[in-house]
Image (cartoon, rainbow, N blue to C red):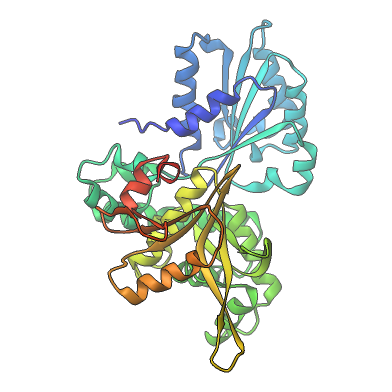
Length: 418
């Protein structure tokens, strides 16, 4: 069973032989290696590239451990180059190579090398290395399966598929398991032995209990505004008074660097400026999030918001939390100022959308609450409410568009066509 990942394949094709290092990043087990081999490799072969001109090394494999030495890696690759035709170099988990930036820089100087590397953390995207590769690196961030990709290999209806997706998420191997028990066991194993341990070992964390508590707090409050001070207060309420705001900030950074979570900042829509704190955190895979809290709190409202956020990011949008101020005239002549929230202010190039995630709008009070912020924006960009109902698609008298979560997730161009 092959899961087609045409969105990412087309990105690779568009960047082929562009004289830049293609850097494929993303959470572990999201399918980065599979994207390059077999998907991209098969594309190259079908395009007429000789197999001898595709050189791949898995640098997290014990059999290739010697090539984590930069000189040996360079020598190995160069010994494979026997003519002036283009060679496609695929290096999996490049962060395992000491001083890898010098090796990649050396490859860039060879006109017939087209280099693709993967990595599961942002070590090689830190400020120093971004400076080193400024103008010479091209990042492609790979997310776990979108719902559309998941559904392409799911044996069932869209409705049952989404029910599964919001519980078990989109790690590609999830699609190979038949029972709930197998899926839960797989996610729990990845959580404990891959994701958490990876963060602990990479950052030399001594108090893993504090990290695990922080992850549990974040997992339990997706879609809620927070900051290190609020999180510290939560720790104190649990009886932990030794952790500091600085430690919490560091842990949050580590989780972002491991691509487990992403931070969405608040943006003042009318003032056109960012509000530094508080922010929201979302998980790149909802199945891992659910595993982190032992599959409790499977409320569809917050999970739906997380899935919408991740899908927007997968499509290449910048996603902020919108803040808009509404002024009301009071009977005493004074003015009342309220800050209203828009779930997502979405930008990519000239495209901009305001999006609310609403599980249901049958309740008139809930509907009014969702619409107030959108109606207070005051510009002409599309304003969209995404709801869980399978059959909703209409536009009201205020120009606000109502769209089903299914229409949004299954149509790559759903926002543009709305």
